[in-house]
Structure formats: C-alpha cells, structure tokens
Length: 161
Image (cartoon, rainbow, N blue to C red; front, side):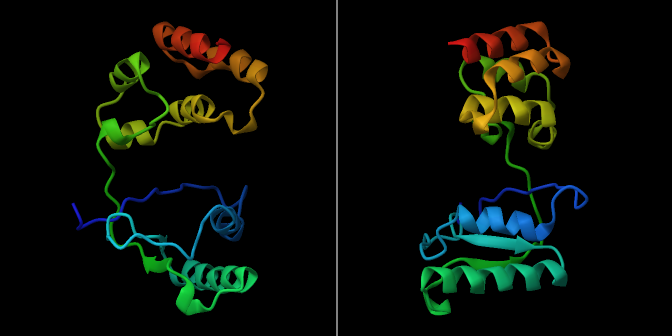
C-alpha cells in the first residue's frame, strides 16, 4: 500500500481560472506544516511543467512566510507528476453513497469514467456539503443532467430531506 500517494487530479480551463488561482485555493485550505510519515498519505502538490513548478514553489514560500514558518517546517512537498492512476470506482464520489451508489456505479465502466463525470461531480458536491449551492436552483437544474429517473428521484429525495 505504501508505494503510491493518494491524490486528486484537477482539470481546469485556464480561460476561466488560472493555475495561480487554483494554488491559492489549495494553500488556503491546506495545512502545510503537518504531514503523515507514509508515502500513501504524504502532503504533496504535483506539477506538470516548469511553469507550474515555479508557481507552486513560490506559493509554498509565500504560505510559509504568511504562517511564520521556516521552509524547514513546511512538510508539504512540491513534486513532479510522473503518472496518475485513477482509483477503483468504489473510491470515487464518496458522498454518492448508500443505495444511490450501486445505481450510479452501473452508469460507468470504470473509476476514470466515473471520476470524469461532471454531472456526478455536481451531484456528489451537493450531497457532500452543498458547496454553498442554492438548494432550489440545484433541484431546478437537476432534470437537465440527463440522469436516469431512478437516480434523479433518489437525489431529489436526499436533497429535500
């Protein structure tokens, strides 16, 4: 189990949000001075090219300074992305649990397909903590997602509780 690091991969449109803005979200929600000693749960930020590396390392230095930490006290590593492997389906979209899980799993052939589903990502986010979404708006747009009626009805039932 210790030969990999659990991570997420973020796809983004640089016309909508910059890599620097994504880094701000990351560092604002991340405790860089704490780390797990195992490779599996290490704190790491992976970059894909030198531009991302420079930005990530710069933000790490800024974050450490803002927190009054020396760079030696920062446990988060900035590392090159070598390979990304999608986890199995049962590890994807955690908030879509319970009886809804089996129905959602049946829509996708593997973990990558499920992870890449923007519709299930929206449903998962809302069922997880809502991300500040308006419940009425979410329910109004739910029928536009193209979900099977069984899944749509279960999501509605959970949201309306």
